[in-house]
Length: 125
Image (cartoon, rainbow, N blue to C red; front, side, top):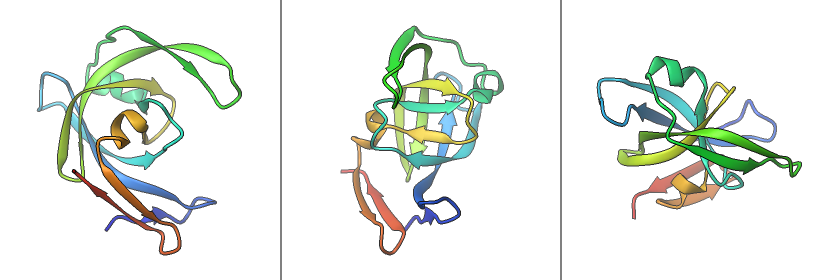
């Protein structure tokens, strides 16, 4: 059962995520992924655009928590999470060190958060 990262305040649920190039499974990397039910779309670190040689596949308009609108390049990747592979996942790249798993990914799982125990379950329905 995965655990929250208790070094954060407040602690947050993280899980290992493999980010895979959409057409070349040999180009992949594993990172931590933060579950964020407030995010519409998932995000990957900007460094992966170069590392995996990803090409933009259009743009998406986003709105941050302050209500400010920005336009981001969108990328298609495959993700492997909790033993489940998801292909053709739309993501944006941001200057962060970990993957951010938004509702476009989280809604494909049954997720049970146990904040008291700082653990959670992610299951493929």
